[in-house]
Length: 438
Image (cartoon, rainbow, N blue to C red; front, side, top):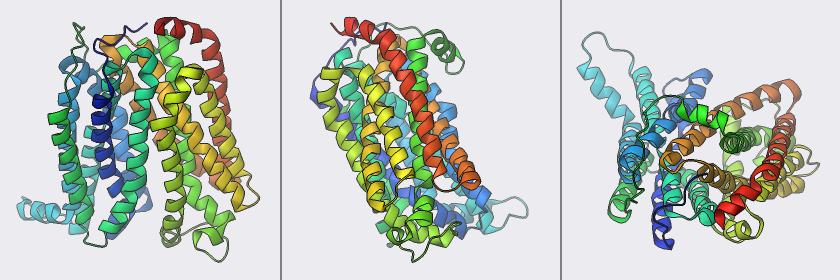
């Protein structure tokens, strides 16, 4: 069992880490809705567009464990701060992709490629850099683990989830407005926000003395082997993976589902079974409003309500309720006879995700050795990135094979498995976690 943190702390450091992560994720959210517009302007195929979205999560999948291990070795603060600086550079490259490509052509030693193709390549580089440096988000979770007591761990993890939810929710709306100013504005503002977050973290965050700890390798499978040996860690990682997998499937198919089943609520006069790119963009603003509500509910639960629920019910019980509510919400959306039922499902979904996310993060942290918490939370982030790649891909296949309702039912089935795992986990380990907190 992990030792208690060396330096329990009060509210202020948690507020600092919340603001640091929120500002960073706000910048991330700003550029997300612009990727299809930018990539199409530079001649990207559908496959290239998918790769452009996927390269960010792919880099997070590869490097999140590494950043966790680095933070275990040299401290949380430098990894967080310099990761934000690197993220700012990636956003600046994104915003100035035209200018960067033009400069590369002038420096090209032989016959240069076409400007639009080179610009598309610059976009790939910027998103890959953003994923590489953004993989250090797990360090924020490790920082929370360092400065909270075991019984308050889920509350602290909830702040990270709230920062994610608010950043993802508000960022796309801000990005849409900035795109009306200029094509460069969203990337430049996102870069400025990341630099502001880095400055804020540099001045406000205090490194925690975690005591003597073993040096961990930057790469390797130590944590993977540890998760396979320790069922407390491995089980919590599996539960977290399934929740993110299902939720990302919902997010990726929501617009297409709405166009096919409830077109009038997505700006269309009649049902669209196979939406074009233009139809998808036209419906995006309607879906954005609905998903804004989803994100706000999830952020409120993770940032506030979880504080009241954890002391009363414990993380293991909430880890059962989370995927169960998620599954119910997905089933309600998938089977909705009217759009009012879709709204009901969209209220249940963030309630489930808001309960699950901080609870699972707390369980992983509490089961991890104190000198390897960053590495194990990095592994969680890595698996979440893999889930965000696999969820939309498999949901798209299911959509094509069995229709627009099927992705939600298949995602609900995955969450029933997560609920079963959580129930078994509660029966086996709830008592040991309770003893550790007493």
